[in-house]
Each structure stands twice: as structure tokens, then as C-alpha cells.
Length: 118
Image (cartoon, rainbow, N blue to C red; front, top):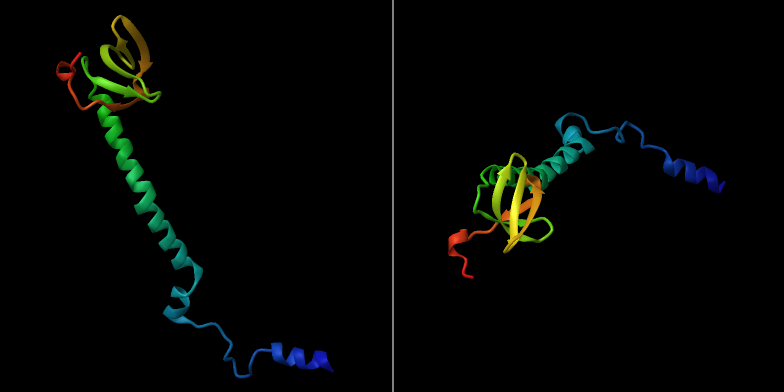
């Protein structure tokens, strides 16, 4: 007897009132618009700024020239003394040169080499 009343309580109401909403309200209430909105948020907050930053970094790497002071990804500050294609020779101390790949340059030091006091 108890199970009969539970079964009636779980049954949909008569007259089709439990049917899905159709039209624009049904489309906007579904999961697809939420997924599109989440993708748009990720694109504008994460993907697009990262692409912009990568483009600026690539431009900076292409503009490197002899005499520029640069920071490497390892945290070493050095002055470019030679450029051989994709390889840069950095002077990190007087008479100490290291060769690195151009892609391992993290940033350019803002001060020109002539302005650095010794």
C-alpha cells in the first residue's frame, strides 16, 4: 500500500504540464549556451592574453642585437657579444662568455649597456 502512493507521487501530472519548454526558452535554458559562455570567458581571460604575450616575446627575440643586456630563463644577466643565427654569446662577467639559444632569453634589460655603471 505504501508503494502505491509513492508511485502516484512520482508520476507526471496529467495534461502534459511536465513537458519540456519549447522554443527560445528551451534553447537558452539548456547546457549549450552555458558551454559557449564558458569557452568565451576562457578565451578572453586566458587564451587571448597569452597569445598576445607570446607575440610580444617573439618580437623582442627577433629585435635582439649586439650590446643588448638580457635576462635568461635561468636568471643570468648578460650582454650579447655575438649573434650566430639562433645562438647568442653572452658575456656574463669580464672574460666569461656563455652560448645560449635565442629562445632562452626571458627579457631585455631596460638600460642600454653604455648606461650601466661599473
